[in-house]
Image (cartoon, rainbow, N blue to C red; front, side, top):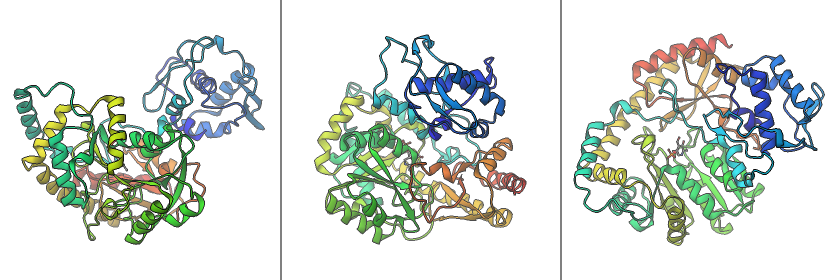
Length: 504
Ligand SMILES: Cc1ncc(COP(=O)(O)O)c(C=O)c1O
C-alpha cells in the first residue's frame, strides 16, 4: 500500500478536482489488482499527509468509492477494498493517471479487454522503486556526477571520428558487446579492482539496471529467495520483484551486510545482492571478515552473489579494497559496474563480469531482450579509454569530488553540527547524515523542497517489508555533493541549516 501511496501524484494544475483524481487513482489500482480485494486502505490522514491535500478531499473520494461498491466499511473504522467488486465495464478506456515519475498507467481491465500478467502488474506496482530524475540537477541530488568537468569536446570529437570511419560495423553486433571495449574493460578491471576475468566474460549492458534485470530473470524462479541489503538500493529490489522473487531484507551494520542474520533467517536464498565497496545508502565498506563469510555461505548454499560496484572509483581515504569478485574461488560472484557515476547516467552503459558458466545463458537473454546495446557509444567509450581520457577523467574527478566532499563535511561541521552527524565518508558521490534531534524526515524534505533543496530521506531506502531495522540506521538524509561546486555546497548548507532549524 505504501508503494501505491508513494507512486501517487495528483495534478493541482489540472481542471479535474483533486477528489476526482484520487477517486480515479484508487479505482484504477483496485481494478488492476495493485490494491487487492480485502486490503485495508490507510487512514485518510495518511493520504492527506502524503499528498498534501485536505481531509475533505480524501473523504469525498472515499465516499464515491464506497457508494460505487469499490470500498466497504466505514471511514474512521477501517475502509477495505471490496471482496465483491462491481462490474468494471463502466470504466473508461484509459484513466489518465500519471504516476509520480510521469508513467502513464493504462486501465486495461475493461470487460473484454485482456488483463496484465502477474509479472506485468509487478512493473506497475513497483514503478516507484526505480524512479528517475528528469528535472535540472540541484542541491543535494544524489548519485549524480559533476557534468561541469566532463570533457564533452573530446567525446564529440571521438564520436565524429567514429561516424566518419564507420565502415561496415553498423549492422547488428555481438549481443555481449563491442569486442574492443570488453578487452579494454578486462584490463581496467584487473588493474583497478583486482577483478579476475577475460574479455569473453564481460557483457555490456544498457546501464547496470539492465544487468540486474537480466540476472534476476536468468537466475531466479518465481518465489526464490534473494537477500538484499536493508537499507538498500531500490533499483535492485525492483528488478528482483519484477522477477517475482521473494525479496529478503538483511540488515547491514558497521561491517556491511549481516551475513549471520541472513543465514539464520533466510538460509535457502539463491541469490544475494550487495554493495560491498560502498554500501548504498549508509556508505560503509564491507569488512574482509564479512566478505569471506558471505563467500563461504554462498558456496555452501550454492547461491549467486551480485556485487554492485557502482562508484568504487571514488575512494578518498582508507585503504582501497579489492573487489569481492577477486576473492571468489567458487565462481559464484557476478561483478556489476556502470558508467553512470564515472561518466554520466544518460550514456546508459554498464557491464557485468560473469562466471564462465553464465556467459552463454546471459548472452542469449541479452540477445532476446534487445539484441545488443547501441554500438556507437560503446565504440566511443572504447576510444575514450584507449586514448587515456578515461583514466585522466577518473583522476581529475576523484580529486574534485574529494574537495567537494571536504566542503560538505566542513559546512556540516561549522554550520550544521547541532542538527546533523555524518556517516562514513571514505568515498562515493553522496554522504549519509543523521539527525541529532527528533526531526521528521518527511517534514524536513517538504521544507527543503519549499526552500529549493532536493533532499533524499534515508528511510527511502528502507522497505516496509523489512522485519528488522539495521543497527547502523537512524533517521537522516543522503546528500549528494559530487555535482555541486564548493560554492553551491556552502550556500546550500546555509539553506539546509535554516530548514533544519525551522523543524526543531
Ligand atoms: C547502488 C547503485 N547501483 C547502480 C547504480 C547505477 O545504475 P545505472 O547503471 O542503471 O545507471 C546506482 C545509481 O544510482 C546505484 O545507486
